[in-house]
Picture (cartoon, rainbow, N blue to C red):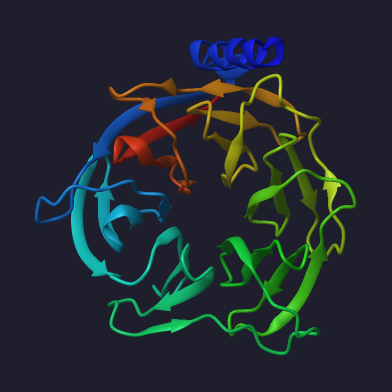
Length: 300
């Protein structure tokens, strides 16, 4: 009973105090929220979002589809919809050619779609050193179209080139709780998010091992599940159960929390994937509010 009471007190602290040390270094301004597609059909529990300098693609999970939008400043315009009646898209990425990739939560496989959505196929890694099954929990595509797969079955991050050929793998560290997401910065550094321990691990470009980048952030984070990195190397941790964002500096220091539980603008309710574009536009899949929220990020 005492343990449950402590957990409740901690959760109340997280939700009531969306900012902590150093949060003033990074300012976030709410811009707009996206609720529907071009035909006015509302989003339903969207879990995925990825962005470029002038577009975003949303995994509209509850409606089994992907949606494309363009944006210019605060103006967001709905574009194409890609129905996926037999799929459950939860994480989405786009490569430099416009090819769409998403993680199917039902099949636990990564799916490819042409830029027009007309062709569908499963991503099949080539020339793997082992025939063991791959079970992706998450994945990312970098600026050179290399694919990084968080393989929870194999206990590794699998790195493929743009043709899905095996390039290398990075084994999980010996001790960890549960890895739920990864990110890759412009220099090729790979980051792993341990949700249970609230720790971020990192591996330098071409490294074969992960090392702790941060200490445990349980004091500030409830249960972080998604991870993103901006062009300056600042990390954003989506605190799913705490309905907020944690921010980590390049040196691994915790810079603070942003946002908090709510239903009005800037409020979050069980958020999922997020992304930050090169121009400082930040998008969050505000899952249980059935919307995508857009913010502008300003670093002092």
